[in-house]
Length: 148
Image (tube, rainbow, N blue to C red):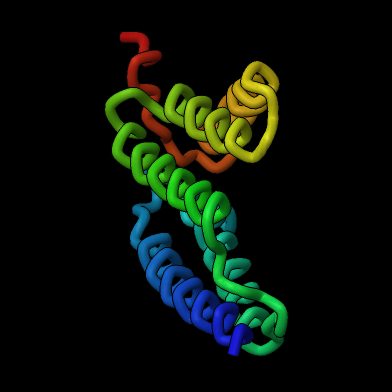
């Protein structure tokens, strides 16, 4: 009966992949753009990877996978709350700060010491901001760090 856990998660992830991929196709192409790599490329790739992993979970579930209980369930709920807060904070405080905080908190909750956890978050935020803004031409909100 525990193999249903992975199949249920796989179905939910597949629904998320389809919705995310559809939303990725709605991102407008910048003026003068239209090359093979645009702002929707990275989100589309993420949707494809998510869809493929969800199919794997549905077709080859782990027979010994039980629902998480106790501390593990609590940590998963904290992760979901952090991701919801990240989504809500992304626009007002900006990608760099929101990403640093979210990645830092998630790394810390997974067992890293606080300073290295937030340094990883800062590094990921800087690399992500540069990659999206200059590599993929997908403007991310700078928020509090925006200079006028």
